[in-house]
Image 1: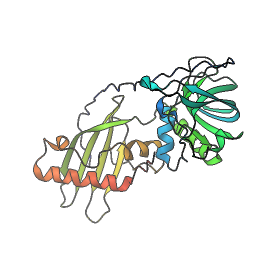
Image 2 (image 1 turned 90 degrees about the horizontal axis):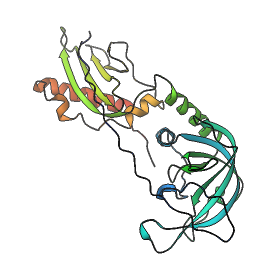
Image 3 (image 1 turned 90 degrees about the vertical axis):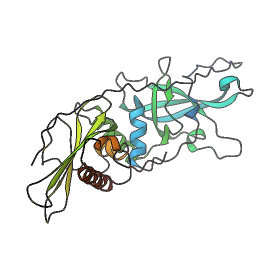
Length: 293
């Protein structure tokens, strides 16, 4: 059984986050200036404990780099918004070992700023000795400079983290990469010709307007089945996405906890209740997003 319905598309412009630009104060000896970090570039790095944490960083970072820290020099940076006291950063130099994501490549040696930890706290290894790290960044203002994209954008390298970064990057850059979900559109429900048989379709709103829909099938004596379709045609062959894949992440981390009332505004009361029940089934099957950062 299949419902043939027009798929509405919505496009939404996502505003760019404003960046707070910090100027490096002059020191007695000339140093090469690195791209100024945002306030979130503090050295509060935490282990990426979930797929969602890694995906968040990679999606936000045009550059994903495996590098070895070669040197650090402490510098003071003017506080934002007229703050009285300068902030301590480390102007850090790293040698590139592998470029995992980056359209235009990078220089073999990179410089960037990492904020020092508050007084009394133990500095992480990457601020104390030469170690291999994973960097999640954007290009800086000059060749050889990068800017970390968040306070967690420098991570101790592990083989597992590198493989996860390569896998997510590969999915993200594919031509058929699942789009970002920005909302839930209309839901439809129809009962079958047999008691207990039904189908619900829920259309999702995406960042680029590409069609994405959920379908939930129920048949007497069978476990309810649901799937996700990336395309105009929705059919019974759609299946749930495997956990810890980009499509799973797009759904688990973006779908609201309840089916919005506007999604069922055109449905009769019983059909709306059935659609909400089927939407809940999808969320329970997906499980928690697992985002911790």
